[in-house]
Image (cartoon, rainbow, N blue to C red; front, side, top):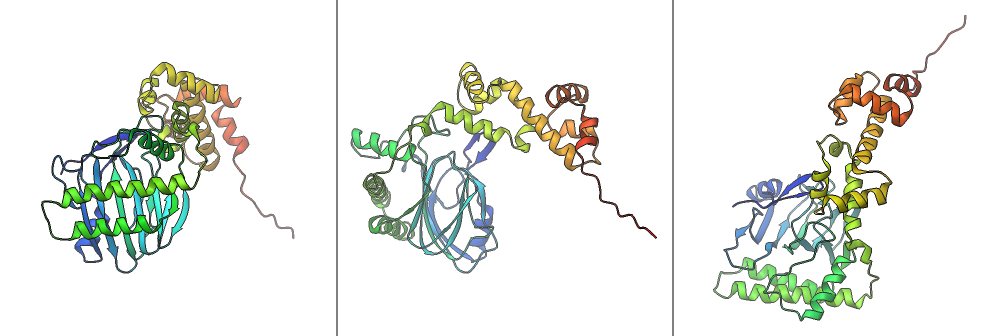
Length: 344
């Protein structure tokens, strides 16, 4: 099966093979039932069957596993429901311990993981639906077989876009629909299976809409602005793995799915720096940390590790930002080893 590939904040994500899960299934540790496409594990959905559905099904893990699903993003919105057992679940580095009856909702820009680091025993259901977005500010595109009225669809989309609470209590209707989906998928094939599954997924989202609407949650329109997309990117850019990449302003703007002019304007608004200045500032901060923590490494090596192609330019820029040369900065800021003196 071909794999869907997309980029988010300079990381390339694919609908991977979930190799740890696949291996566990082959070894008989996990029972898996799912319908999938784009490289997700399971029985392939045929062309034209439930467009937008990337994966729907469940796994049943007997005993504590020796694998987990590391932090990742999905192409679509993902719903999960834990029927039995418990499950460590991490979103944006915040850890939750899911217990029976809990449901999760994650959007494409929300990194999340299952297991800490390993998956616990239990039965977990899921649905991943691609709604055509990768960033918070992009408009959602629901599939044509999703049948709410125009006004209800608009409200439902707002409830999902302008609220990023990841963990909820699944009411009886949500639990019932997930179980029916599981029974349908693992049951005998029939010409009506996809039709029934279409009805059940619509019913699942209807039940979710009723939960969100009933809670009277406070919506945050700022979560869906272009400014937030750029802000999220700039936060990620401060990570060492990101600073080592070769960046241009055009490439930064593409990662945010915005134009160069708008990206530059928002970057200056958020940081009071141009994109190039902000990138250099973060690289120099990274270099300063390495100079303090790794006194035996050469300055040239640190410069290259921080994304600079010239040690001379690095030294000039470092002195401009830090007010001292890299060498003198290291001598001044490296902690001295404690020594003991003995008196006779």
